[in-house]
Image: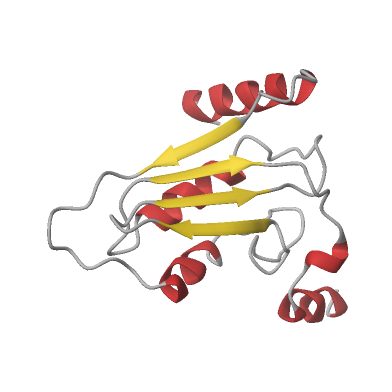
Length: 138
């Protein structure tokens, strides 16, 4: 693991151990779009997210139902709320950053902020039909 990954994971684990409602974990990536650049479509953003897979369950995080909200700003910045399957997820410090990096590499996307949320708790019912079909293959 890289030093940055270790720091991200430590920050998330610390945030999960504190019961204070104000404690959040956020992963960021990207930079502001230049004036006049067309912003990406929501479909392009979703496709970027679909490139990030949970290494323990070979299903992408979008179809797993871990993405709770995608909010695209007028300036091309993207705010994402995502959850994890469990607070003790071994890749907790990695997946949010991977989502931020994947989305920020999409043409027409500015700054990306991925916030880890725990409410509502993730359940298998949050999976897309595609994700549920993939589970049936295993």
